Amino acid sequence: MPLKGENIYKRKDGRWEGRYIRFYDENEKAKYGYVYAKTYVEVKQKLLEKKAAASRQPDNISGQRISYNEVLDAWLQSSRMNIKESTYARYVHLINTHIRPHLGNYQISKISTQRIERFLEQQLERGRLDNGRPLSPKTVTDILTIVKSTMEYAKYHNLNVICNLKKLTIKKREKEMRVLCQSEQNALIQVLMHEMDLYKFGVLLALYTGIRIGELCALQWEDLNMKTATLKIRKTMQRIQDTSVGAASKTKVIITEPKSQCSFREIPLPGFITDIAKEFIDHPKAFILTGDKKKYVEPRTMQNRFKGYVCESGIRQANFHALRHTFATRCVEVGFELKSLSEVLGHANVNITLNRYVHSSFDLKHTNMNKLAFLA
Image 1 (cartoon, rainbow, N blue to C red):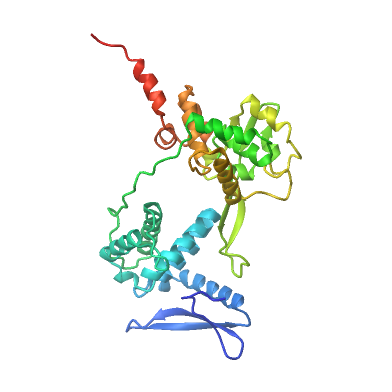
Image 2: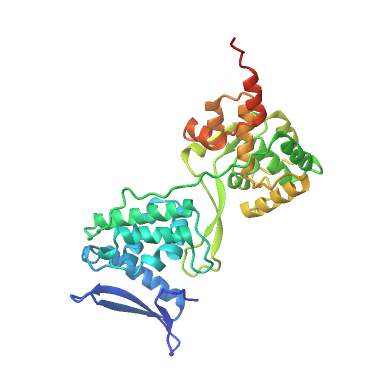
């Protein structure tokens, strides 16, 4: 089915018709081109080809009457070959959901700094028009990043960009990180050890390695070396928006390389983890969470499983990522060397580990305070 704003229609003769802007005349009036096909999918593909071809034409991309929608299309087309599929899907979602409805129809030369500031303020205050909820500062920051990049792209192609966004930033609120205290961790472990299965083993593995949920879901038994007691992280799993033409579903699950080069890592395993793993180890190509070569558990399913274990253990609500924070905090409490911890977590530098993932407990603070000698 066509989406709102696509300019794709079904004709009375049964064919599908798509409309696109070819150019603007001297009176700034849009002149349209048309494509036709027997199906909606074919028309959409033809429109994409026409827009891509137009974006490669110097006269079209350099024209001063071009709309911001056209800049967004050209920028997406240009960026696609240089970014990960998941990043591209994220860009498409933010552009189509938030940016196009508010800024897309304006001429690029008419979008002022003040207009963008008002747009961002609206997103922070009310968010989507369909539910009225405000967007998080993180999401609005991502939107601003796209707007800045597309404006720079427009400048590169000699468009008349009048806005200046260099000093425009979004103030972020510090988010409280959930860390399980030692008693909560013990309660959760008790649930995991009772009638242990592959799901519970996966949670225990994350608790004692700090791996991300997507990394856990993508693990296969060949990634766990029993001889050296190490775990190799070399891929991750995530569900992203399916941007392909004629996609049967809005989203899809992909397994790709980790989020950054630093995320490729080898993690030493505690002895008791390998002892438990021996009870479940299967074919090298089988996924650890299923014991099957073809079937996998996706992150949102694993998240729901984890919430069930949290509820069963009687501890305060926590999401799966709390295991990563808990692991880092326990490591610091027992005197883990910070450089090694940073590498185990897959961080680019120690500062990220300290600022984001290390949370000192009150008991540890109390112990350290008692170490101070009284000065008479």
